[in-house]
Amino acid sequence: MKIKQFNLLLVFTLLLCFSTIFNAKPNQPQKKKSVLLVYGGYDGHKPGEFKDLFLPWLQDQGFDVVVSNSLEIYADKEKMQNFDLILQSYTMGTLTKEESDGLMAAVENGSGIAGPHGGLGDSFRGNTSYLFMVGGQFVSHPGGQIEHKINITNHDDPITKGLSDFSITTEQYYMLVDPGVEVLATTTFSGEYAPWIEGVVMPVVWKKMFGKGKVFYISIGHSVDNFEIKEVMEMMQRGILWAIRD
Ligand SMILES: [Zn+2]
Image 1 (cartoon, rainbow, N blue to C red):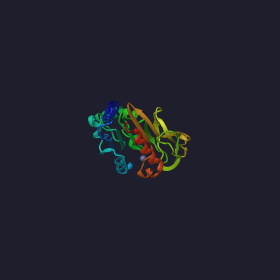
Image 2: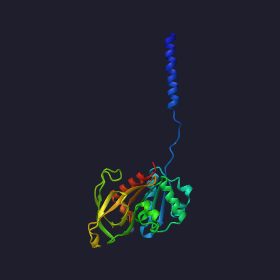
Image 3: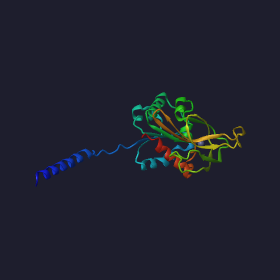
Image 4: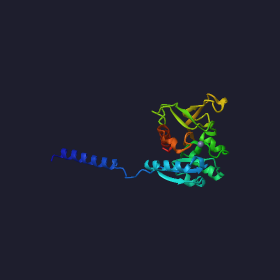
């Protein structure tokens, strides 16, 4: 073999070795995202059925899921920092100061939070820090279970993209809403059960930030059969996936 050819071969071999070394990635499995599913509170919303519906789906997504039917876990600041998402269905109830601080710190530091109906939008009524985080509070559902229309108002957002307006028979939530939320879907009150609110356009689905944490809310979800409507389930699932820490 001529020297020149030998040198070329040597250079080529060395290059191959280096590229193999530098391209080799340690075989690190990606850390699974961790979700805290908290359910409870007012029994009329059957929070256990919500948990039974969404727990298998969360596990199918490959998340590590911790389930709690008590609010006490919110007081464990250290544990709370490890969750990438909190999915909450806990209507009414109250938080102790430690529970409130733990929950708020987790979201402010980047854990997402998502939930439906009274499970997120009618929890811990007297806690203004919590209301500031969620961006709204239920106040009434005139007429109770009534048929009404949901209008998808944002057709570009990944949570509502491709979805069409639909009708549903359930509680039409009248809420006090933070003007800072990003509204994705609305409903309009007919005034039949409270004439003075005729024509009021009310947010139904919104997203927002709280510190580094993403907040997703949908006011539909009085009972689990609401999620049999394809659009409702899509928005809930996409909202959860959006809210989870990146
Ligand atoms: Zn309800």
